Length: 221
Image 1 (cartoon, rainbow, N blue to C red):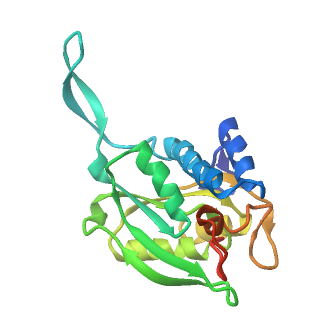
Image 2: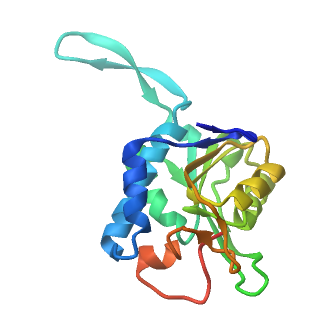
Image 3: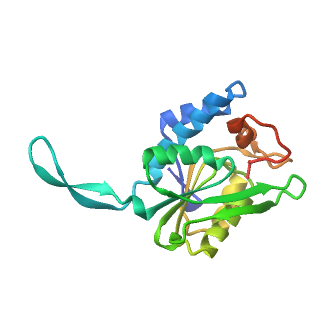
């Protein structure tokens, strides 16, 4: 469904997606299962987000005859996860559409200021010609996603879609005010942010849960 206030926002409603996100939230879900769920959820979200993919016709031969049939133009795609939690989503997107180009953006949120800090950016030189899918499991304050879009645009990206698994209304508001022209695909819209700017009910630190670590920073962007 679309978010009433912002027409560029799509909140996905598929029962399987809801089921897997519930399992993702559960604090009893262990690292290996958590990582697998992020990948599976990314495939389900990607199926919806990539519905406008470009295709071209190629000749193949079936057991019956030669025929011209559509295939996805993989060269037109670029997946860009925000490190490090976004890497879990990259695996799912590449399973959905193997062989696509990927870029990577490194951001983390300062625990004191709550502001995103940039530390890495590696993008393909022809990114201006590609449909770019920015990936991050969590949209909390929106700061990292907004900064990531700025980085992409500085490098020439023109067609961007942002895909996240869980979002807070505050993050959606901030992102859409900054980027009303960029499609935002959300797996679940949660209640709010708490005093530490964590999404509630959320799922905790997604990066730590994917990689089985404990850190002083959070991937709840």
